[in-house]
Image (cartoon, rainbow, N blue to C red):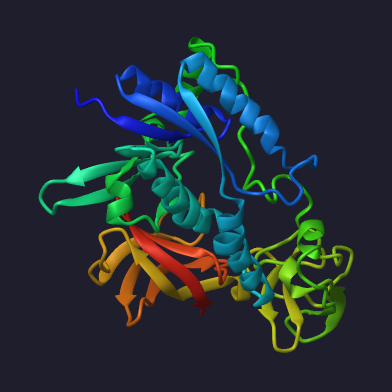
Length: 369
């Protein structure tokens, strides 16, 4: 076996801990790095990176590997958080996990690891990398556990990044990862999975955004244009949102399409120009269904756009791959036409393309029709 120096991103969670264990078991020289990406309110009840670091250090101790604490907070603020706020202020709903992987974990962290003499890096993501001998390219594959596959969040990785990356737990199911952690006595074997990026964590999202984005209340209107409430600022709502609209008790006279008087309300459109939030009743209202989307800022794993024609795509994480047709445009844009209309396609989120288990890449949704 070719023994390599591999730097593992140890987050304090069970997936990265088992990643380090598996690589050490294979005979590699393993070094752990704990990434601190946020420090504005790090002592709050929602973002306890010191606790995570203690967990990561305990894992390193059990495994007998070194661990280094590295602060990427400045990079994170410049490359991820600033873009996150820009998108929200423009009325879109960004996916910071996608940006964090592209800009921090597989750029800043990868660069740091290379400076430490690493030949590869590894993380606890549920995905796989395969070298295709025929094309000479590295392919990004879905993780084998369909309930945990994270290739959607990794779709912006390029050939150079994939050539240096390992995802050992992508070959396993989560139950097996937990079993291994328990078997070797890892202190975090039963630690619950994190529920999002640290700077939001489990905190009330609107309360958090409030600190960075000014409120601009405006009308909530139904499909007929009637004002039925007031929103707290378009940035605080996302398409398809059902909770927190403050209009649950309102009846719509003559509700259409079988929605019924008490059918739930959903956010359907955001008009930034008039600062209006448009809502409709019923999960399958036509305003919530889009047969076509346009995307820009495309990033393709192979370094070039896939051939136009039939493929499959996700417009949100945990969605089943939806059959569609790809039309590639100029300057990193593309268009997808779906066999079946997609629900609550949201500008700012990622449209990610697949060919079976192979993740081809994707782009940022700019418009749905």
